[in-house]
Every structure is written in structure tokens, then in C-alpha cells.
Amino acid sequence: MTEANQSQLGKGTEYDQAYSPDLLFPLARSHNRASLNLGVTLPFKGEDLWTCYELSWLNSSGKPQVGIAYFRFPANSPYMIESKSFKLYLNAINHLSFESKQMLQALLAGDLSEASGAEVEVLVSAVNDAQNTVNTTDQPYVCIDDLEVSEFEYLPNPELLSLDDSSSEEVSEFLCSHLLRSNCPVTGQPDWGTVYIQYSGKKINYESLLRYIVSFRQCQDFHEHCVERIFTDLLAQCQCESLSVYARYTRRGGLDINPYRATSDLPSKAENIRTARQ
Picture 1 (cartoon, rainbow, N blue to C red):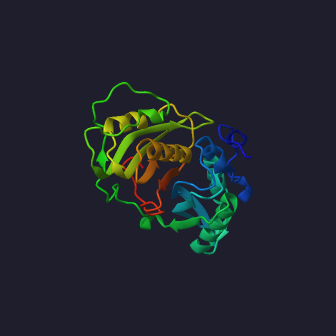
Picture 2: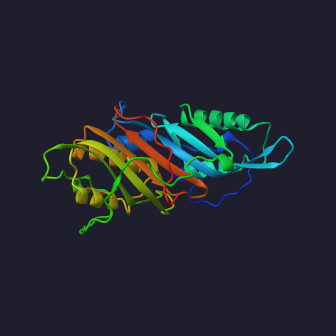
Picture 3: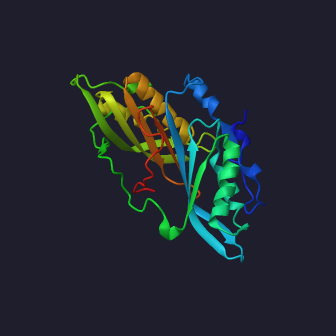
């Protein structure tokens, strides 16, 4: 099994390396999922939606081209890609020539699908045609960040979650918080994000949810793992009948990573939005 400390994370690196799909460093999803007691049958579907803001290549005349690329990795792929290796791979394309943008897309999709073990969707967009120019989401999310809450913990604790005892009705709510922070498990660098939670079922206590989200502040784990932990903890502790968890993390090195996990009744693909910090 590949381990993150075997990757290029936290190590000095030579950029402008020669193109090679071997630069991609796959990480098995099964290792983290075992720690969450998840078996072969997963309680969620979803994807990891990546955005690359620093994509460049050459056209057939040698003229540099730039664009923004969107990558959709299915959540049921056996492997995810370690982010620094992804950056090195994309940088190694800087000096490759392509007759068309479609040929570049096909190369990226083939390499990433091979590395992750599942079909990866790739869209390369010209900068002037870029998606997500509006920093918003169509859903009426209620932000819980201004609640007067104290007694925080800074390592993930599912027991912080509770239901709202004042309400016995079934509800459908859209909640969000901009206070999600976790840390790279190898370098310790902070990762900042906004988390969007859509659920139906018994009403969740907002204060407990805010304490729980803040408890990731000193957690050292990958973005994808944090979202899967949040999803499984909410599903177990709050008995949600329907649930999606979608985190939009700020970019590092020109890449942002945005994991989305949902129960079977909800869409399998995330809305491709941008937050104000992205």
C-alpha cells in the first residue's frame, strides 16, 4: 500500500521535469475507510472535484497556452491522487505540444483514470470561458458561524454532535460553515475550507454541529478523508435520513480540492461553485 510519507510531500522538488504519468502518486482510499469501519459497500456516493488554475501547455506552433482545468474523480475509485504529485505532473505538461485542447483533455483523462483506477472526467476551459465566475451557490444555506458557542475541542470528536431536543419534527435543512480547518498529514500546513451540509431527518443542534466542525482544527488528514469522516459521523450520530457533505477548500499551488459525499437519494455529482475565498 502506498503511504503519503513516500510521496513528494514536504520534500525539495525539481520542477520542469519531463512529462511522465509516473509522477502521479496514488493513495489507496481503503486505508482511511478501514479506520472509519467502512467496508466494500460504502454508505455514500460522490466525487472529488478538483480545479487547476495554473494549467499551461504549447500549441503545435510552440506558442504557450493557458487554461483552467476541472477534474472529477469518482468517490468509489480505489485510489485518490496525492496533491503535490498532481502539481508536478501538471507542471511537466508545460512544455508539451498539442494540436488541440481536446487532445490535451484526452491525455489528462487517460493518465488520471489509470492512476486512480476509475474513469476521471476532465474539462479544460479557456480562461475567458471559465466556469464558476459567480461566488455563490443556488441553495439557501444557513451559516452557523455567528452562534455564541464556547467550550471548543480541536481534535475530531463525533460525540460533540447532538440533536435539537426542542424539536421533534422532521426537517430538511441546508447549513454551512466557513470555519473548517484541517492540516496536511505530512507537512502540517493548514487547509482552509467551507463545508456545506444538506440533510433531512431529526433536527441537528446547531451549536453541537459548530463545535464538531471546529474540532477538526488540529486534525491532520487529507481533504477527502475529513469529508468522509464528517459524513459518517453525521449519519451515525444524528440518524440523518438523507445527507450530503460538500467541502470547498482554498487552493494551494494552483489546485483546490472539493470532496462531495451523499446518500443514494441525492445527486452523485456536486454543483461546481466557487466560494469567496476561492
